[in-house]
Length: 171
Image 1: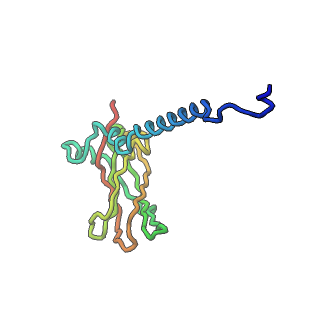
Image 2: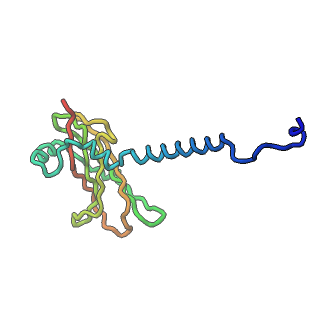
């Protein structure tokens, strides 16, 4: 009772609860960092989705790409300037599957060409299944892509759409 009245306390060191809290917090943070770094990169995810795809240069590629029609929509082509003076182009098109098989993967190279039909800048986009789950026979989808990094004086004459990889759904 005398120690209570005199106001003396025990050792004012670090409490065991505080140490346990710091250790648990450090373990949680380490676990989150491990989880984030163990996720596959977008490039790895794209490669995984295109496993078994027919790619440009393979013998049957030309036969199957004849059945995929991409129509550029010049009316919906837009140009926007950023605060730094760069130009961003928004390109739109319609993709139609005229073939008899359902597409489960479709990668397209989209780019801008100049008046001499030379490619200025392009971007590869995985439309199926990233933007649309699959594309059946006779189906059409509207797509759009933004490509950044143009300069104000670039000669941007037209958009070029080119199929680069096709994957069919297992029937």
